Every structure is written in structure tokens, then in C-alpha cells.
Image (cartoon, rainbow, N blue to C red; front, side, top):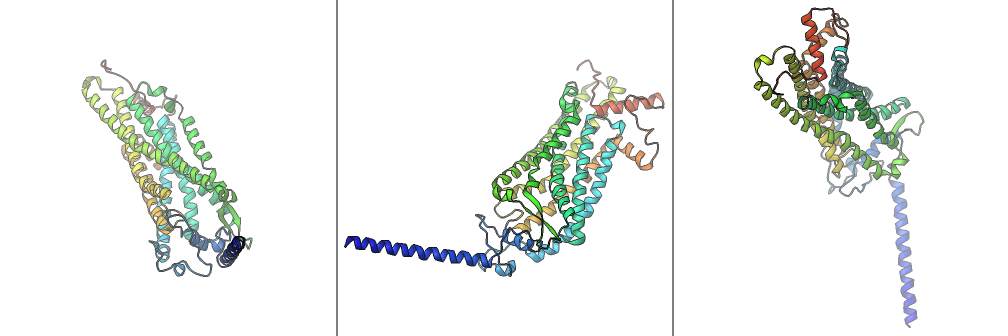
Length: 443
């Protein structure tokens, strides 16, 4: 009897397992038949894929949306609604994109002008090299973004790509523009550090690598940022649609197989090239302000008779340049905080990120945060214009086309002018080179 009971128990258990297995297979087949593949590369399904991927909740489990239903119809009554509705998002984004396009186009004109002025021969110094590279990177980054936004404003953000514009977006907007933007953060911290060393250690500063070899330091930072962001072309690809005429940007198979690795690399890039340099910018702004106050106090203690002539002009030029860098760096760091704060929150938040449940809120916040980031280019130009006499003088010469080449002093050549003008020009050159002349016996 015991053997019969054991056999009946095993038979019933096997039958129950078969029923469960068949039920699971049938449900899987029905789900595959009803729900679309969220990894499709067809351009016509990009919005549907976005809605599918954007319904991630706390544990990042996906609530799939059928292809023949809208996102609002598919949400149950007890399901949390997104903060920003699709109608509000579609109404606000075109206005913000148009405003940012005009604002961005004006800002790159100013950054290009600043790069040209600091590249002039009479601005030849370590600080000028950093400012040229900084403004050039700002110009390249802004120009690529303007091209992308112009296309989105004219034809719409959901319009399918052509092949060449898809690759331009992939390489230019996603890789080069992002790396240039983050290179600017690093160069801003480096130029503040260079000015701090010149003010604090006037005799030792000329022997520091940061000041002796500015081009090498700039090249290392730019190449490092560009190489580090090569993971972006590996993450995305330009794929043709089903018709073979239009193209879209979608994720690669390499990214699907190593999604966690790509996320880790992206987070490291954010911290290494964005958050840490901005933290250094704020700290160096405070340190540079303290160094300027200490220098002013020590200068007041010197006898007025020993603070005349060439040494006074040099110290005045150094202080003027340091104040220019201090003001521009502080404003740049403060105006860059909103955008980077939004990115930092999206790194750790479960719904507030690019393809998360609150993706519309994230994109609106990120687009609004771009406005102060673009405004930092205006504040940099106004800082140069208001605090730097050499910048104003060269800008007026270029603007009025008045002896642009003759009026600029090339290092090693003396201009055909009076002795007073020659001494004033040489003093200006030495002030930008960060050379300190000690005229007091107390030092």
C-alpha cells in the first residue's frame, strides 16, 4: 500500500508540474504576440520604444505598452502618473529648444572672439594658452549642438535621420561635443590653478610644469577626454529602418551584452571630467580670492616710494589678470551647477533619468539647466571685457580694423614707438607671463 501511495503522489506531482509548464508557455506566447520588441530599430517605433523603456519603476521592472495603445490609455488607474504629461512636454520643448538655439548661437560668437583675441601675439603667455584652448573647446561644443538643434527646430526632433546626419550626431554631438564640454571644466580648473600659483609663489611658479609647458598639459587633457568618451560610439550605432531609406540611432549588441560595464564607465566619466573639476573650480576660486587679499595687504605694507615705476605696472597687471580669472571661474562654476546637479541626481535616482519613468521631467529640467550653462559663456566674455585692459584694447583694434598687425607687439621685436609706449607694452607682456619683480629689500 505504501508503494501505491508513493506512486500516486509522484504521478499527481508530475501532472501538476506539466500543467504549470504548459500554462507558462502559453502566457509567454501570448505576451510575445501582443507586446512589441522594445529593441526595434525602426524609426517609426522610436516613440513607442521610448514609452516602453520609460515606464521603469523602483526596481527597474518594465511595464510594457501594447503597440496599438497610447501610454495614457495603457496605464491603470492605480498606476502612478508621470509628473509631466505628454501634452505639456510637447508644448514646452519646442519653445525651450528655439530659445536655447538662439542663445547658443550668440554665445559661440563670443567664445570664438575670445579665442581669437587671446591667440594674438601680444597676449602670448601660459594663461593665454589655456584661455585659447578653453574658448576653442567651448566654440566646437556649442557649434555641434547648434547644428543638431537647428535640425530639430526646423524638421522636428522625431524626424528620421539621413545616414550622414546620423553619423554626424553619433560622432559629433554624442562624442566630440560631450568631450569638449567636459574638457572645458578641466581647463577652467587648470587656468585657476595656474593663476593661484603665480600669485602665491611668484618665484617658483615659472618652474612649474603647468606654467612652463601649457600646450603639453592642454593636449594631455583634451586627448584623455576624447579617448575616454570613445565608449559612446561603441554604445550607439546608426541603423537603417525597415524601408532602408531612413536611419535612426539605436544601441549596439555590445551595449546589450555589457550594459552594467557601460553604465559604470559613463558614471566614472561624469565624476572624472565634470564633478571633480567643478569642485576644484569652486575651491580654487576661494583660494585665489584669499591669495589676492593677502597680496593686497602685503602691497600696502610696502613703502610707496618703492612701489613706483615698472614693478608697480607689472604687479597691477598680474592682479588684474588674476581678478579676471577669479571672477570668470567663480561665475562659470556656479552657472554649471544646475545642469551637473541634474545629471548627478539621474545617476542615482531610479526614475529620474533619460529613459526612466520621469523621462519627460528629466528632459525639461535638463533643457532648462542648459540656459545658465550657456549664460556662463556670456559671463566669461563680460569678465574679460570688464576687467582686462589688454583684452579691451585688442578687441577695439580688431573691431575697428585699426593697424591690427602693427599695433600688436610680437615677442622679441620692438615696436616703432616712443620709449614710454615701449616700456608700457613690455610691462604688459611680462604681467601676462606671470613674472614678478621684487623691489623691496624686505622680500
